[in-house]
Amino acid sequence: MILINGVEADRISVNDRGFQYGDGLFETIEVIEGQPVFLGQHLLRMSTDCAKLNIPNPDIKQLTDEIYRVCKYEKWAVLKIIITRGIGGRGYRQPEPINPTRVISLHPFPEYPHTYAKLGINARFCNTRLGLNPTLAGIKHLNRLEQVMARAEWNDAAIQEGIMLDITDHVIEGTMTNLFYVKNSVIYTASLHLAGVAGVMRGIIKRLIAEHNLTLIEHDYGKEKLLAADEAFVCNSIIGIWPVKQMGNVGFAVVNLTSQLQDWLRQFKEQSLADAR
Image (cartoon, rainbow, N blue to C red):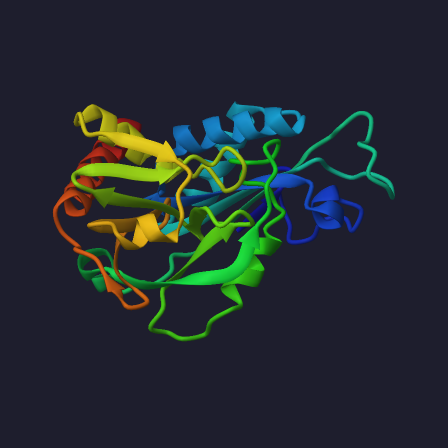
């Protein structure tokens, strides 16, 4: 099912600014037994990003009702929410008033092998670089051409993710994930103050790290720091946490802190679903 502004449909206007300029944002959410996982966190991030882009925030009750209308019979799926600035004329000037378009769609859950989470994945560095923009950094906006170009760099089924650097050669994230690494029991991740997407799962992992009194450092770092790590893992709201077992000629451990974080995340997810029912 696809709902566009609350109505079942599969077409939007060619004048919609999401189509014309990528003028909008989106959320991607796991659905289990009709329940969107971590829905509150996703809606909070969506509201925060709408404010940053000066897009009026959708009515949360109306949006939530529509979400459950789409999800209620699904055992396991992926929910996507798109919010655009709505229909506008030719040119960059924003329409007055702004009447956002909201699109809610459901998709099959991707069939990733269980070994990715248990034994780890292979990753590579991408040649495509992320540009620097403090105004847009962190936002999951619709302009994802850098990720599209980076993902087009490989077709090797043995590689599960590509790691992206910015134009100053700082490691930022994966093409579809956020990235953490561990060195001497300290957890590190990119600061994302100039580039990258501040994923909902990244925020949840930061919360789990703090709750269990571990040390997290957000900083700017290059390839050499990552390749010297003891452990590395990627994350997003669909895959959870995948350890990185190999990057080029460098191998990483897939146990210790990464597996502990996976356990904590599983417990937190189960509790969140129980609380939502």
